[in-house]
Image 1 (cartoon, helix red, strand yellow):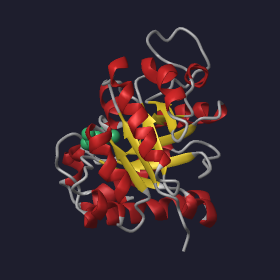
Image 2 (spheres, rainbow, N blue to C red):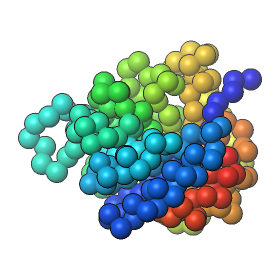
Image 3 (cartoon, helix red, strand yellow):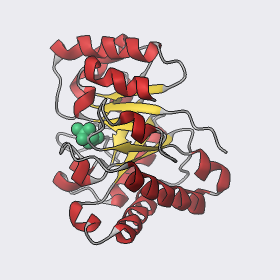
Image 4 (cartoon, protein in one colour):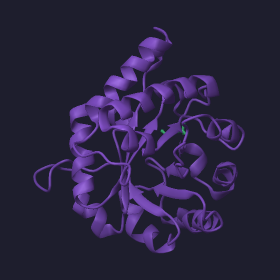
Amino acid sequence: MTQRRKLIAGNWKMNGLKAQLTEVSAIDALAAGRGDVDVALFVPATLIAAAAPLAPHMVIGGQDCHQAESGAYTGNVSAAMLVEAGARGTIVGHSERRAYQHESSADVAAKAAQAHKHGLQVVLCVGETLETREQGDDIAHAFVSDQLVASLPEGADPAWLVIAYEPVWAIGTGKVATPAQVAAMHKALRATLIKMLGEPAGNAMRILYGGSVSGDNAADLLHTDNVDGALVGGASLSAAKFAPIIAAA
Ligand code: PGA
C-alpha cells in the first residue's frame, strides 16, 4: 500500500487584499502545527510577494500561469513571474478558468509543463459538469479520465504534480459529492494514472478532492480511499474555517 502524504490546499480565487494577510500568518501557524501534512495556499498574484515571507511552513502559490515564457499576453502572469514573486506552486486547469477563459486540456498540459520548467509545484484540476454527471456515473468517470489524460503534461511526476478532482456542480454550491461518489471517481483516476505513468508513479501521485469542502464534511472525505487531500475554496479564506479541515487530515 503506497503511503501518500496528505495535502490540504486553499484557493483564494479573486479574494484577498493586504488586510487579509493576517489570515495567511494564522494559516501558516496551523501548518506549522501539522508537520505530518502538507499545506498550500493559492493566493491572488498581487498577494504572493507579501504572503510568501509570512508562510515558511507552507507553499504559497498562484492560481494559474501562462504557457508561454513571456510576450504579448495582456493580463496574464508567467511562471517566471510567479517564482520571482515568491511562489513555490500554482494551480492549473481550474474549472473556472476552463469555463470563463476557455482553456482547453491541451492548454492546461502546456501550463503545467511550463510551471514545472520553472520549478513550481503544480495542482492540476479536472472535473465534470452537472450535465455530464446526470448522464450517469460511468459516463462521468470516463469524461474526467479522458480530461485527465488530455491535461497531463509530458514527464508528469508525483514529485511535482498533484491532481485535484473537483466536480463543477460541487464548487461553491454547498453541494458536496458523497464519499461514495468521490471514492468511485478517485479509483477511476488512480487506474488512469497507473495506465499513463506506470505503477510506482501512478500510485504515488496524490489526488485531492475539491468542491464545498468544509469543517463539517472534511473528516469523511479525507478518510475516503484514494483521497490524498483537499482543494478548498470558500473555507480557506479564514484560518478559523480552514483549521478544522487541516485538523481532519
Ligand atoms: P469551494 O471551491 O471549496 O468554495 O467549493 C473549491 C475550488 O474551486 O477549488
